[in-house]
Image (cartoon, rainbow, N blue to C red; front, side):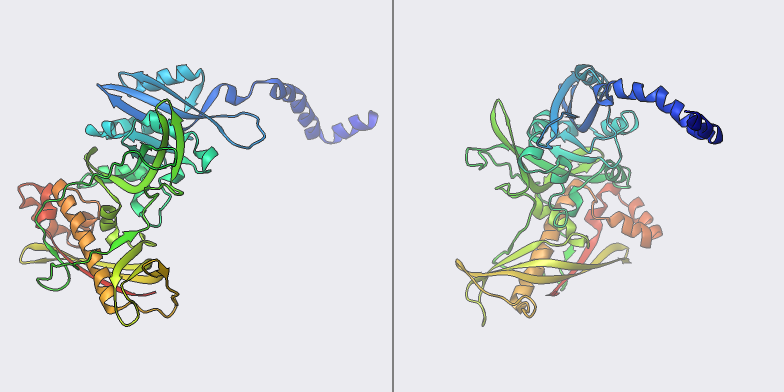
Length: 443
């Protein structure tokens, strides 16, 4: 004992350390856990009906178990304001809560009938929702969506925020965070995109009982130059593409969930909603979204399927190519006072499948050149996709392909004069001439 005290005298910091252990260790050992007083919110859902908000929280409940699976619970409350609904939900939980851990925010399409920015802004400024939180839109109620999302971890091991990004290489712009939403909202044109996930009832085999595949209407003047003057025709046998997110069968991009109405499934079909000044103006399917992404050099790995190919090698074959790389060069100019936006898109393709009927053909991907006729059809397919989507953007007076930023950066003074000459500056896309050149090559 004397030796111990002598050591303490020589090293007083050791004495201080022992005092701290004696004072705080018992309190730490016997005090209740933080999870007993605070709820961990992983996702928040917002619905609005008849001017009444309903807030639903997907909360993580720390529970000892032998499966290493999370235990989640959905709690919801209603209120005349978003703040009141959140406060009531906290009372229902019986715990303090914060949204800093929430990775996803689910909003129903009913919330997009009015300017949704004020609600999202409240979540970010007052409720401390992280600006990296992913926004998800659904045609079901957000509460119903979160109930189905409870089983994501158990059934397919996928987090809700990962499901919206399931095909991030294929469909680049669906992963919209709060920060990305507000960048679009406060841009000159006030346009942005939010990823869309549908929730639908399925039968015992997992197939959809109902399918919602409505497209936005497309009817506007076309000022798209397809590369050669006067060339506005397309291949009579339209090629189709595959590789969208999820798919109707829900393979890999879906999750099971059950409620009193039967079995439900979340589908990621690669759809997005088009937002103008915080209000939903259209829903785009994966083909229309692909048209937007034609000018996005980060949106690759998409499959393009060409049918009815007959030449010296193939006989009525179906060829599937994957976009392995993409180069996009854009430029702006003015011709006789008319703004011109030109783009040169080079696609590096690799054949991934060749079939004649049900027979699969062996292909050498390293040496397989793209037949001239197939290359032309791929080019026309890409051009048509861009042209069709451009009609939709023109109709809704939205710019989510960066045309405004490009003109502002390269022809700011002329572009400002051009906008001032228009009766409605938001309608500027209808007065811009687009020149698109698409070239394909073997990767």
